[in-house]
Amino acid sequence: MAFAAVFLFAMFLAASWLVAQPVMAQQGQQSIPDLIEGSTARKDLGVFAEDLRSFPNALQAMESQRQKPEGVTIFAPTDDSLLAAPESVTQCLRQSPRAKEIVTAFLLSHAIPGSLQIDALTTKVSQSPNGKFMQPTLAGGDSSAVVIRQAASRYPGANTGIFVDDAQILPDGSNVVTASGVVVHAIDGPILTPHVVQMLSEACPGAVPSAPPPPYSG
Image (cartoon, rainbow, N blue to C red; front, top):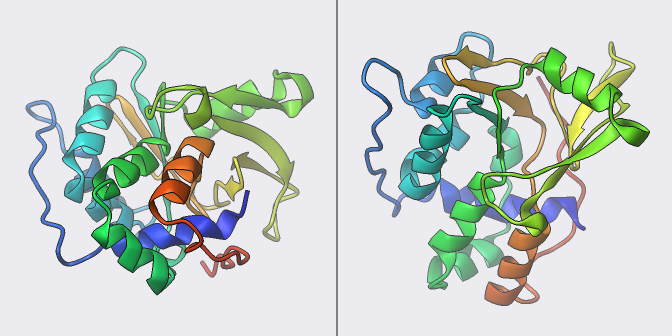
């Protein structure tokens, strides 16, 4: 599938006409967006954090999974990778009655059950056949699952990296947040599952261009 198709979500997710709605974390805990924005490990995940606030159904699902014994892992795309939406698709989604449904599914495809730090992910990959495994996401269903694998790194200084579908966990982007019930990793591009592709194709047929993902400049 065309990796760059996901860039359409950038301006839509951060659009000024979307009003953030409060979602409460458990008493005494910071919300997931607050944890992401307050992290000292990375400071370029603010767009994704604000997107979560703008789509309370997605955020509530992540917060609910966080309270379960296994917790939640979130793969957060960097701001640069979320700020390249083609205007044609942005306009299409703004007019689509399915826009919130599509973006909620998109956000939930970036979260998986289990609070897995980078060492745990690496171990799970190394113990899997062919060095990869299929992982369900909070979006639900086989068509919303992602493939987590190890492959040659895109970045100097690391021979291999951990990939979630086509997005790589950045060499300096693992364990950005490690808090009660939640781990956040920074990735170099958004995740586009078959389920989201189908909804997007139905809502905006012919509006999605194909282009390579932007390089990570961090």
